[in-house]
Length: 397
Image (cartoon, rainbow, N blue to C red):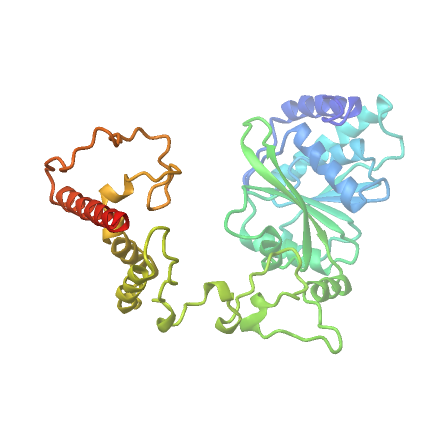
């Protein structure tokens, strides 16, 4: 936890600053707003500048809207910057800042937290619009929630003009609806790159703000990044037209899956509609079943042929009905059992129980049948019996 707050030296610094701020009656003045972020939040800002923009003992740290100069002292103790100074609009705050920084530095040197040769941070009393230059500062900081737009634009022009400034950290309310780097460019800071943004808290009230860390981009580097963002096509390479760029499977942007649309000529043959004349095809002729005469089969085939224009399923059903409606397929004929246990239609009915009247118990006359087909079969059997007896008498004679 102490490391997140800057360590023992920074804890000692904040104890001294709180003590002398109470003696001065706070940092309020007559112009602008006074406020500073907490110890842990300021340490987070300085660590980010150190890791990403080279803030070290050779750096010069500046605070726009310095107030009493608390961020300047924090950078000197935590990072060990070689020099620090600030700009403040309010004359009362400037006078308080001079006494505040001098007394705190004297106590830090006395307790051997700082060397005897360290310089006391200076706070220039002037509006930022009238400051001629920010050099030789290398890193800038501003809690600019209360800074007017004209002051931010003046700060931006000074930052862009400076040859020594490399990075800037600003604390304000969260930026909504706009890209932070674009907002800084609109304020005149020139081409900058957003390194990080994170929430911070205001000291005392605990109000939440956001810190944004930017680094300056040199003009040559800005041109290079612009060319990388828009690579020129290689010599001889095919450049797709804008209206077909999202359909090109050879696009250099390999991070996206391209959807290639096929023309109707390249459609799959399985999905092609069949011609109208091929929709209704005649079903193939079926083989005659066992027990059906050739003439009956030919008659059935002839009856089916006129219906060939029907759908295949319908033609098959009609053919089946026609075949099974023939006399040879009557219910009584199917139940006539042959000597081998097979019916006339060829179906095995040997396992079924069939009532067969023995020859000795049969009478010369067929019993009365209830159905017309039964009487017709009985008459046919009687005629066959008579023919057999007549043939037998002829042989005897």
